[in-house]
Image 1 (cartoon, rainbow, N blue to C red):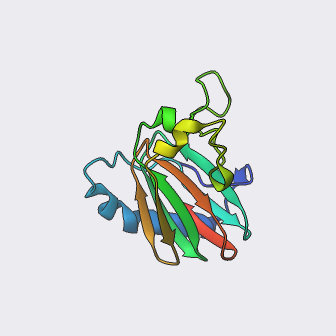
Image 2: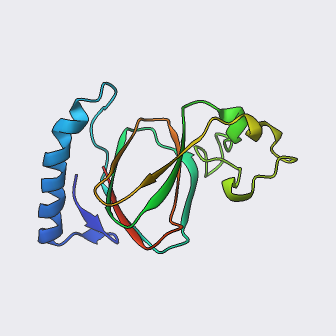
Length: 149
């Protein structure tokens, strides 16, 4: 696809860099049995303290850390009851209603059955997220940048 920054066309040097990264990672990704190809690439840059709440994507992803470290909380597909996915008609369908930082077990009692793991990713790390896997990214350590393919 076309490289876009803030709704406009990306500068040619950035486009070239992203194409080189994709060319390097595509053979690695293709070895994964369930990798269905790259969706639209996204560059995530954020400040310490930012949280991208628990959700899942319908496509496989490679999450490539450029700088800084992030905490990834991941869980296998399904778990709709334990993670209280928003209903189909809701704009946040595919996201959890539970605030993982302070889960309200009275409001969301099935959350105690959620199967989640924590992973710390840092510069040069690549995290493969198969489609439908739940994930939340937190930046508790420092400012970060990552490329999502």
